[in-house]
Image (cartoon, rainbow, N blue to C red):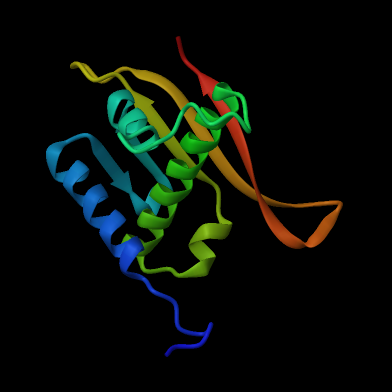
Length: 137
């Protein structure tokens, strides 16, 4: 019925509802104006490796699969912050930091995942995400 021009946004809206529930429960704090968010370690791992994630996929080693799942969650939280800020595509081009904190009070920092966009030499016409891992323990 619809061509490629019309995309189904319902999966994104459903995911944003999940992130809003995490925010209301205190597991996620977003600061769209500062381009950063805080999430508890357990909430991040739950979003990345929920019940339906197949960690026994033999095509990739389990550690690589887990890192890809975490990277996907970081991208989704960045997109959620951009949606909250209402800046559009420009929001995605700016650096973003996801701070992972401990579950118990005080919420000490465990590590930060810094996400930035860049061009790589083999595809200069496309943007690619660059992740930087900053541990604190």
